[in-house]
Length: 76
Image 1 (cartoon, rainbow, N blue to C red):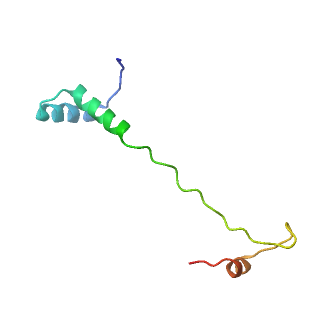
Image 2: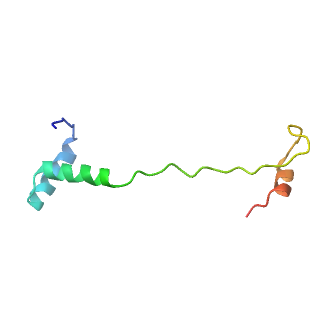
Image 3: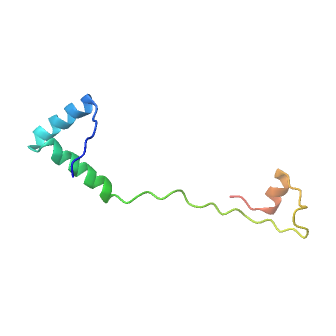
């Protein structure tokens, strides 16, 4: 498959220099980089946060302030 990629001039000069020093073509280095990126597993999003439940005898009527929250939940 053929494609066109715009590479900034300074990056392309570094690419050509590196390819020449390794005795490879720029195409080989680009393919090696693409394969490396595809081989690396995707990063998962951050862990899901589990919020604590605060029990209430009358749901929807519990009025909390910071002091009450610190009394109900143990913080490290």
